[in-house]
Length: 101
Image (cartoon, rainbow, N blue to C red):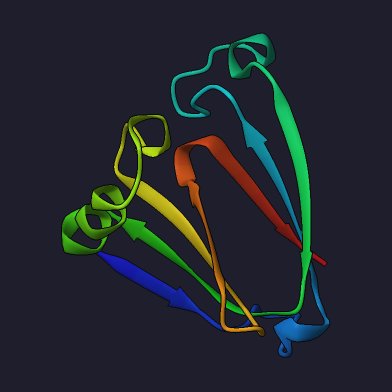
């Protein structure tokens, strides 16, 4: 299933927002402590037009067909950012937290 988002309740124009991602080595659903998350990388994007949350199904299978084993999410969930340039950035959703400002 794919859920598409192009705004938030407080941010109507996502192009003006900064997206801050915290990408974890470990899975946030199974981690019992912060140490279980392992290495954390912070990534900041600007200029997005929207994002999708993909939870299994055909869309997840399409992502996984083009991804090596290390990029496959254990729960088959993906966060896809749509950039104003037309490019996309895809992350394992169970390994990332996203914040908008």
